[in-house]
Amino acid sequence: MAVDLLLGLQWGDEGKGKIVDVLTSDYEIIARFQGGPNAGHTLEFDGQKHVLHTIPSGIFHEKTINLIGNGVVIDPVIFKKELENLQKHNIDYKSKLFISRKAHLILPTHRLLDAASEASKGKAKIGSTLKGIGPTYMDKTGRNGIRVGDLELENWKDKYRALADKHEKMIQFYDVNVQYNLAELEQEFYDAVDTLKELQFIDSEAFLHQAQKEGKTILAEGAQGSLLDIDFGTYPFVTSSTTTAAGACTGLGVAPNQIGEAYGIFKAYTTRVGSGPFPTELFDEDGETMGRVGNEFGATTGRARRCGWLDLVALKYAVQINGITQLIMMKGDVLSGFEKLKVCTAYNYKGEKIKHLPYNIEAENITPVYTELKGWAADLTGMTKASELPKEFNDYVEYLEKVLQVPIKVVSVGPDRKQTILR
Image 1: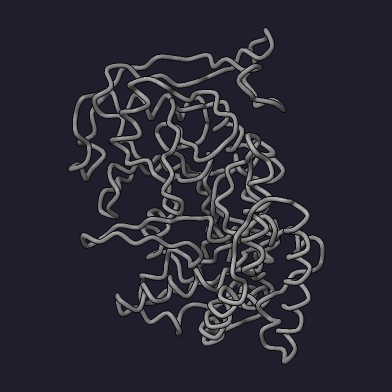
Image 2: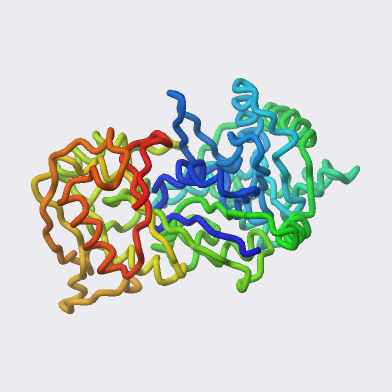
């Protein structure tokens, strides 16, 4: 049985949490394959909003197994708070939430290192969420990290002490004023680890291989977006993991030839949190309207998202590097009321018109080339069938399909799981 993927195709925040929740009824296992609590997956149903950071978005479905894969980095303190929130809703997570022994742990000193590193950059800050993600992945690739499986060893606190002491020396190197009480942070960390150890640690790649043999349906859930990929994103303003389809293979132990459908999610416009280039960013009333109507604030950081027209050059790039087979367009309702819509179909790059994403898309090199389309006035949020959607909306979707050469199978017209229309 092939493993299907669900990926964000922009700079994250595309609405993956909602769509995983919508699709979960078709899958027996939801597996998160990369990133950490810098992710914020927002789900809304039955009049309530839920924000997940590490736990897969299928957790609210009674019969679905949820797996945190080896490619994920886990902060036990944040994780404990997520579990406490699930307890409020009587979610039986102990029976259906598994954690890979090979997943790495975020230590308190990783967060402190993150803060020191970011502070030292001054105006060149990359916009880190300060969750310790980058330093944790650095320890992983530097072969110094502590993994979930280490918590089953008697000497795991010795390993922790050695690494934390090393981190404190590194913090001093940055020569910035980072105030902290490590003893206090460590007590909170140890308490959270005790909670983490109540869950089921598994050899996740073996678990998934067996599930495939048994014909179980599996959906791999990514975090962040393709334009934040460590290799193919807008480096250095990226995350520290592989957010593309390849990350599902390394982050779960799934062979490339075992990948089935690749669902790609994008917004009907474009947003970005934090620093970095953004060719179609708007600084006018249109951008302000998108942010206000779309409630564009980071689910993890609370920071206002930068907004702009849909960038089809960047989106087509993401479709290609991921091998996307089906597209899902989010927040179509936010564009209601715009008389004219623009989509970027090419760049003027150093005096040349190009239709691919070049090495550098900083503002001094790039000017977006726009195609204008007619907008629609209708409120989409109450619509439940494709036949109810206005002609101009369908024209917009069909134009995107023509350029991207991949079908848009689902459109979202609101935050609730019921506000999802199949085409």
